[in-house]
Length: 99
Image 1 (cartoon, helix red, strand yellow):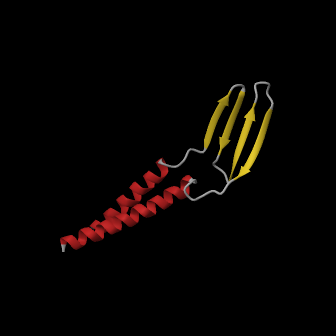
Image 2: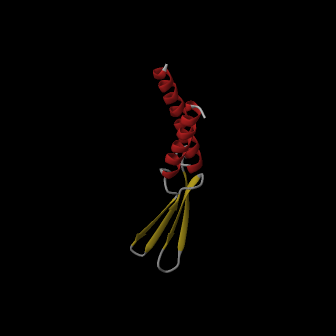
Image 3: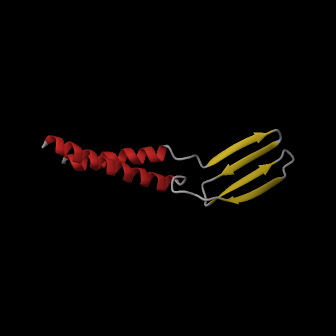
């Protein structure tokens, strides 16, 4: 396997791993006194559920502008593409120095 292909593959794998493992967590749980709040951001908007100790509940949907970086799949693809591009650039620089 030549150097360019090897650095491309390594860049895609490293970039994809960085994108996947640094993606924001999709849910947050908060307890304040007798109220428990759960916020989930893994869909197009943000959903919040609040429950009190008496069993009553309220759900609120709030729309948000989601970016490519908030979705773990697109974040992984984007970081993998950036890593692959950096791998190819590094291979080009190393090839010029060897020549």
